[in-house]
Image 1 (tube, rainbow, N blue to C red):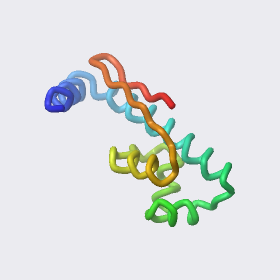
Image 2: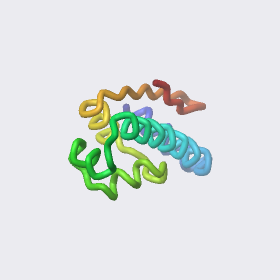
Image 3: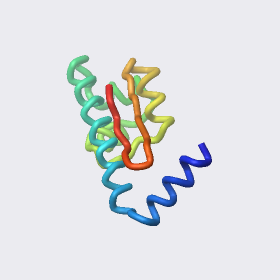
Image 4: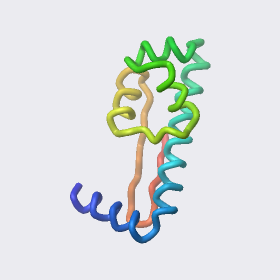
Length: 98
């Protein structure tokens, strides 16, 4: 874990735009899955927020893809909605799959 943190810090210093781009890609993928779940289950943002224990504005930010989800948020989505997130972090890439 320390090596990963050091690598991310190195990448941020060496190529901050790439790290931001990868974070946005993950945020967009999470947003897509959250929106799909909410629509498929006929929930409003407020109802989904209540199910997750977060506010409606937080759900809106998450669904917009502008909010980078924390690991705690991903865990909450997995536990409370049954969604799965597989994040592959390598020295040259960050990728999320279903």
